Length: 143
Image 1 (cartoon, helix red, strand yellow):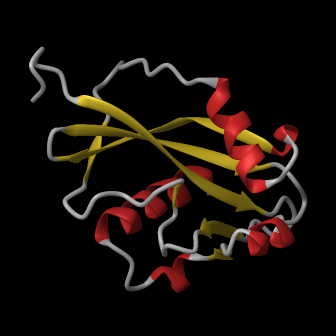
Image 2 (image 1 turned 90 degrees about the vertical axis):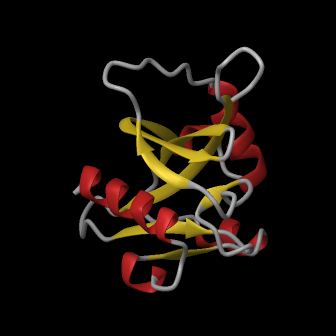
């Protein structure tokens, strides 16, 4: 706990693309092996549902910065407001936000430029359990 008794807040983004015709769902996996942007979760991170009724402010600046880093138009990204998961890591509470790519197809070229790639859940085997839980929760929400 911090001196004022509150957990230190942080944010991560998980990017998902769900094809509008086939419903094929893929996650953006970064060069560091994580699906959490723009840095991986700490090794001691464990998923924890957000408190019932908790309101989490979300800055549109996070989406704008994500679009800039991914070199995509800001209109291609949308926040999924019903995804409410936190991760606890030591003294920190990390807020996980789910972001959709709104295009017909995933932006493969943009991903390649930053060393990332799109994967489905089957290709996620071997990833940390906390990230698998985040991906599974996101998948269940959008399907």
